[in-house]
Length: 113
Image (cartoon, rainbow, N blue to C red; front, side, top):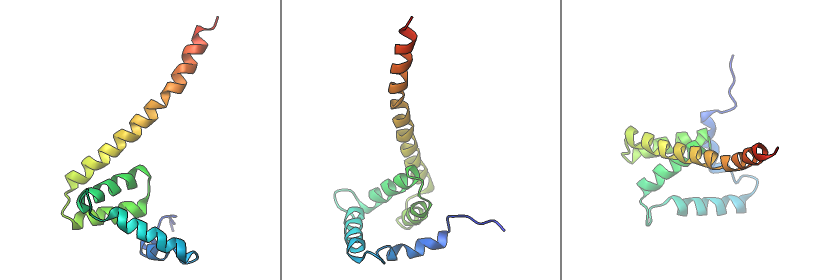
């Protein structure tokens, strides 16, 4: 019998994350609600951003929640996949940008006699 650490049913427990820290839980949900509600960016745009971040942060709960949310807003699978590719390209770019450190060391070592 295979067991996975991740259990999609646990997503239903998310509303209770403030169970042992009620003030902080309330503050989080106030902030979360404000940040994800439509504003200058639409709820649709913010949901695509959230889905992308969920992927770059490797959060299966958020991926489930925001895939479902995007579908409920009429966002297509093509749009979602394009957003995920944007996130993937940013992560790849960040990794490659950090190669600057490696390349500096290589150049320094190769120049030594």
